[in-house]
Length: 259
Figure 1: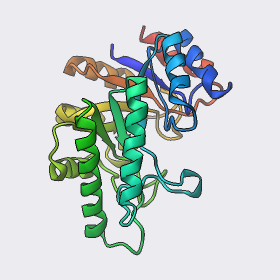
Figure 2: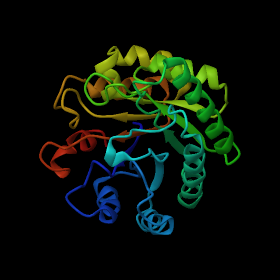
Figure 3: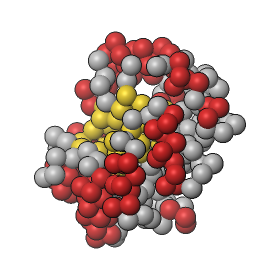
Figure 4: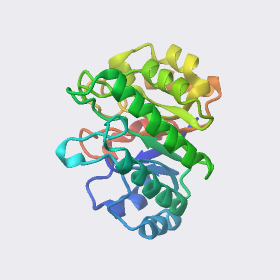
């Protein structure tokens, strides 16, 4: 059975953020991730990880102004210096938390920016991030997020778009972050797609569809998908990144069944 991590941005939200580490460990998770660590001192987060014997699996580069609707700035011309500074900030956190993967959110393409310009900006920024992370032995992940329901206009909305970017960047430490929920919406055929993409997959996240709730609430057969990952020899992390329907504790039947 693959290693499961809890996304603390979405799970255990019944308690304040720093209390979620202990709940994740008590529930049976050995790793955690969250969208962004930057609101807390790195040493505070490191103490929680150590106290509960948890691995920091992944977090995202700074996304720009999240509250204002920005979802990453890597594709935005004129924001390169801000992106570079964000990479350096993320690296400081990654080293303090011993985190070996950082995800880059590509961002929403502005209506007034031509596609080739946004793409070349994205390539250059991702290449810069990859070079900086490679020097520290860290993998840079690139996530495809669905543009039909959650993020219309997101620059990378299919696995093929991510793979095209990986080819253009041409760096050894860049990998696909494959989210079952997003790719069920955009592509479907999950097991066959995972089998094809597995050499390039650096991290997997999941939620059921529709609704982005826990496994068993929608159309994805998680027993089959998790079984296929075992059969294919996937040894990375699978992060539960969903909105529990009736509280986190009640949503974890899938985890109990997998023990």
